[in-house]
Amino acid sequence: MADTSVSYKCPKCGAPLSFLPGHDKVTCEFCGSEYPVAEIEKLFAQKETQAAAAATAEEQSWDTSKAGSQWDQGEAAQFQTLVCSSCGAELVADGNTMATECVYCGNPTMLPQRFNGELKPDFIIPFKKSKEEAVAALKKFYEGKKLLPDAFTANNRMDAIQSLYVPFWLFDSKVHALFNYDATNTKTYQEGDDDVKETEHFNCVREANIDFQKIPADGSKKMDDDYMDSIEPFDYGEMVPFTTAYLTGHLADKYDVTAEESAPRIKTRVDSSTESIMNSSLKYDAFNIVDSNIEQTGGSVKYAMVPVWILTTKYEGKPYTFMMNGQTGKFVGSLPSDKGKEKKYMAMAFGGVLVASVIIIQIVAKLL
Image 1 (cartoon, one colour):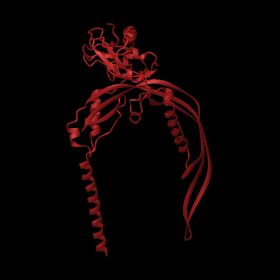
Image 2 (image 1 turned 120 degrees about the vertical axis):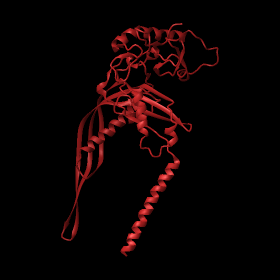
Image 3 (image 1 turned 180 degrees about the horizontal axis):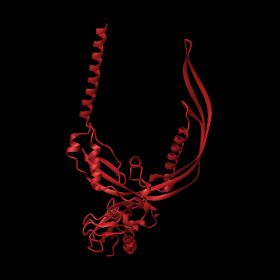
Image 4 (image 1 turned 90 degrees about the vertical axis):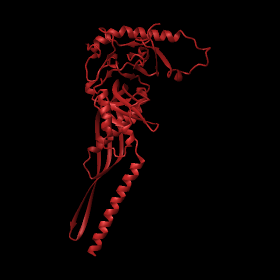
């Protein structure tokens, strides 16, 4: 059976290769050999081409029309299997997976066929934060959370810790903005026995050309947009040209939200940022926008892969997900709350207010 996937193995000892966070080369953790990214890309390029062709040929060689009903296109994407080139086991992955690992032998595995018909990323931001740093960040995230159930931290075990390259669209946008404001300055002073309030009214016009660069929007439906927004920013100065060698040892998804579909979301961000920039130019006590116009005069889009650590656990049957920026270490997530502790702290707060009220009443009584 022809290989339908590619396992990145050390040319010297045959052990799995990984791109370790914080390194600039692909590393064999068994014998310690290190290889430049370009060398690994060249070494495995032919194997990736052969694996993609084998997967396509295998799919075309089977006729399942008489074995039950046909899956529709969306359902079929969720049940695709490929063969591990290292141990021969079947790999099951959803239709967006580009890189994974074999659950049987642990080899980092590329699925080259998933690249066919899709845009190749322009850039990638390599992982800098390790798995150990992600676990440490989670423990620190727990600190100071007084309402966190004791059982959650005492018995907590991570169900999964995964390093994932997430597809991102990076938008550049040039805009011309014209804003018209009503603004006021107010001052008060005394004139004889009278308090005088004097208000000046102004009509203000602000016009500007603004250049936005690398506005991010994740291209994956499975990633929570609020979480992805929260772990920003990424340092784009550390982006490098994309090569599949950086994916070794990590999971990776291709986009299932196109740049065109992301554009309205980016426009909302651009409009909001433009308004904030224009408003910040006013130095008045108060103002309101009479009318405004934001016109896009140019723009371009780049496709990039960014590093994210995903940690998942369950508490009382409910899943909890945490995400960490794999480059900067910024950490976000949601935590359960102990209802008993909530009532206790509310009672303590009410008791403190009650004691303060009694003391004030006693002082007033003495004064009277």
